[in-house]
Image 1 (tube, each protein chain N blue to C red):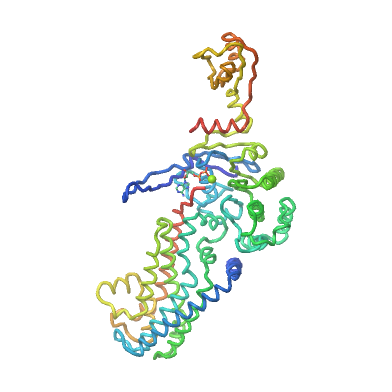
Image 2 (image 1 turned 90 degrees about the horizontal axis):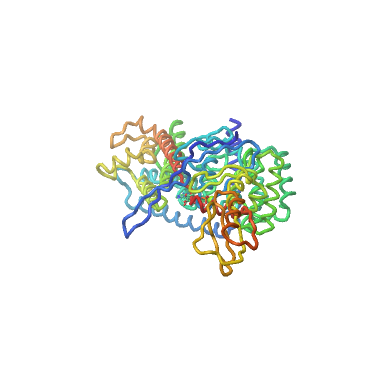
Length: 270
Length: 318
Ligand SMILES: Nc1ncnc2c1ncn2[C@@H]1O[C@H](COP(=O)(O)OP(=O)(O)O)[C@@H](O)[C@H]1O
Ligand SMILES: [Mg+2]
């Protein structure tokens, strides 16, 4: 346990050094943070306007849909803050700079997260979390202790789920440096998918994304649990309570894939 | 034996565009069956021409690359499987890759590394002082790394690689591109590291002065294979037969004349000066044969220098 704390401290130090480096360019960073908060603020305003106009969507009321959208936003923006720069791996692989991560006595994945950490994303993450809290307040939730705990856990597990996607997508670079935005299409597509109730979609597409890939366990199923509603699509409520476990599975798959990828790292001739 | 490699190989599949759409894949054997053992405290010069496979070998020894085949052990550990454990016990400088934090003062990199490697404060201070004295880091410790000259940065890299007291030091072209003074400083520093004998050092270099000054043992590789493993003297001895004889003659060299055990490599000065490269035969026999064939005015036997030896070695093997 003491060892884990020491290790965490080491990463903390490296992270602070990273932030200190970025702080040298603080004017542009502050502008970026403000800029992205404005853009994201507009996004949020759109969501509100959308729900006040159309109200119900896919069989859910406006505040219920808002809860799903907000949970998705909180999960995604927090994941984006922590792992959203994972696609920078491409540059590290292409240039061979990834070598230097492998030469240190630390996890290469955590180092990547730390050195590509983009402080400018912090604004959006804060907004995402605030939106979620607001949505929890306005939604009609039959509060219990279990639900309160669940409400605290699911944005974290949703973030873990998205972070796993970011990492899995980035790992492709070990084989395919030109992968470009393919992986991002997946993660950003996932964010958009999870922003709306799964009942809005139809057919095999819905089943594949909701259950097959597990996007339903980010915002849709957890929101049903919080709202105390059964799933119109028929997933047992007990399974919906297990949503955080899906994130654990996703994280395991992503790290296994990452390890496999690192062994295929080719470096560059020098 | 602190490093051992048996039948070490690394293949890269590279694809090349042919025509507009078609891609052709072929396999490059960067390292093609290298056997290598290094004893504790040795300083090994790992040399070879560009593209010989030096860096690729070092990357497999340090756990960066997974070998395609073969066995490797460094400090008794399998590098890829035990990467992070091994990382604490080795120090690495790749000439073209920095271990330092680009935007931070050099001294901050050092203090971060102290935490990353969990070096006790006292040990860290002692090692840092030693490096500072030997490499003259004082003048630029507070300068952000991106503003350092290459020579200054390399001194920083060497220090960074040594601060955690590694058992083995891997240096990939540490003098490449440096100015004369920095080269000298790095060389003197490495000679000192070698003299203290605490570290095993594997050094790749192109610089023959590095080799002459530092490496008692040389492993020469070419096309991914070891072509020589021994001392510098043995390398000389092996190629001593390639001494040259330069003879000045009274009469022009008869065209087409050949001598057993030697090859005519140049005929100059109105055919009155001939250069013969010895090929396996002792110099005396060739001189005797030469004296019989032509009328000699003057004669000298020239020893190859290291530069020639290595250049020839590269040429022969390719
Ligand atoms: N990542 C890579 N992908 C493809 N080919 C590579 C890669 N790394 C090295 N090579 C090839 O392997 C050979 C050996 O390279 P390297 O070990 O860097 O040589 P050296 O360090 O001796 O100059 C070269 O032909 C080089 O082009
Ligand atoms: Mg090289």
